[in-house]
Length: 301
Image 1 (cartoon, rainbow, N blue to C red):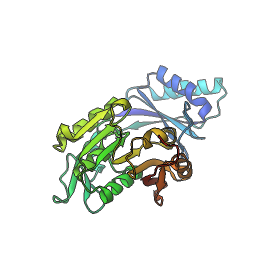
Image 2 (cartoon, rainbow, N blue to C red):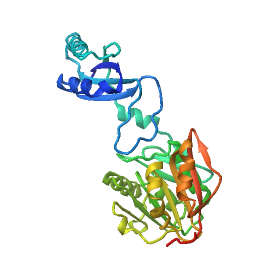
Image 3 (cartoon, helix red, strand yellow):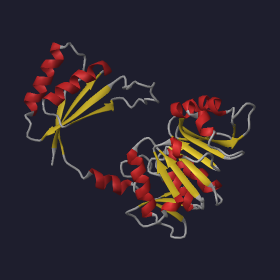
Image 4 (cartoon, one colour):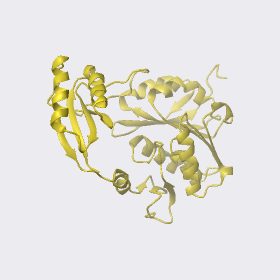
């Protein structure tokens, strides 16, 4: 069904009051978007950063009195002496958003062997290594540069027989791709239980035996060490967990890190260089992939 959409260009300090006002007026959903297309980089822990100029979008039932609603919001803005832009209202025609997303998710070639193929589409190359994927509620489709860079590394370096740890597995896209490329075993870990479900479902879609993979939220259940560790998360957590991640690597085993913005690469390298000898940085659309091999530094346990 169509919706009435209200937009209010504002500043971060006013968003909470305006959001509460819209919800009290019957708003079904509030979204905060960037008014001026400015990036917000990885936040400080415990904070929720907003753009300098933020727009609130609220969806109301189509039969809501738009004129009265706008007037009520303007009265609040005036009473609170808020400096905001013009409050606007428009009818937003309903769409099948799930279908639109599905139509836009196309097969992706990740090198000379590996394709990521939406589970509802035919594989372009039946002779390739095709991971049939339905991400569900978990992150990871291969379209984001961080995921694509990791998939490309797996395509180029998995030779067969490896035991792989996918740290922050999301949809399972990295670890399951490694299995299809010939890895012997994959363990995936994620703090989100939905990621566990998504990985298991995607493994089943690709007819991967449960004996080949294990996914968990408990780091204590992981094996002591692996032949390959790949972690596509964020720079902050990667730095925090550097020693714990490196302890999971066999001697001279490769490590692949992503989810890192270009300006964060040096900080992540600094956090890992005690244990890892890094390859040249790979960059795509402002994101980087770091890869290297474990060395045995003095004092490492």
